[in-house]
Image 1 (cartoon, rainbow, N blue to C red):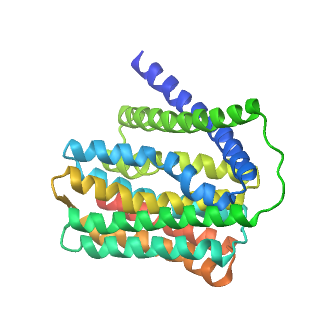
Image 2: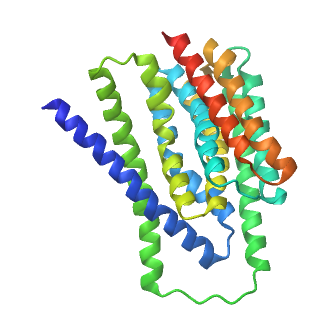
Length: 318
């Protein structure tokens, strides 16, 4: 009976994230169009904040319970999964063209944050002071995104039809309900997927590196796939970049404060997780910054590199 309930909840999680993702992207696109804010900025701020809630909640709860390795691994693993797996799939499906002016600031900021995180972790921990430095980068990111949004709205002088109160309410409700569906669905999927894995005898180390890191990234994956289907590639890339900035500059600083001033970082994270995270970011962002477009070769390289990373982590855990 317990197995049947677990399977049903697992399937419910899939249903919630798929349907929630569909409603969520539709509403985010409508908000962008009606407000004049570029979809890239919508993706990099509002959508990203909503879809990174699972990572934040899992890491904060893990830190509060003293499971620091899970907290750090989830935050870093999610960035790696977002770019290596999710952006890899996105680029492979739609090799989007992206203006350097839209991608450069966020892309360079993300590379800098992760490089600093690698540097801060070399002594085996991230202190609260170092966390505040990372949090300052998030503040800069938020300020810049708001400034760009205001600038875009001022430049856009084209008259837009004012939406009806009913249409406005419907789309705002859709945005909230869609986000809630993604977050709740992802949590159901991770929790019950973990139970299913244990039932069939999959090692805990494999569960952690797959279901927790990838599972908490499911909102980004669903939002990205839905955006690809709807040919909203700018929203997809913006969501991934923004989500990664939040993962790397918000989650660990909060966890370092919760852990009373210093968040321990494991040897595996220092030697394997963080170097691969930085490598995957370089593969995903640097060519696009130079050429102003993504290529399918990048998508293949990202997916291959992520596969190698997963293999090495699983091998180390056995």
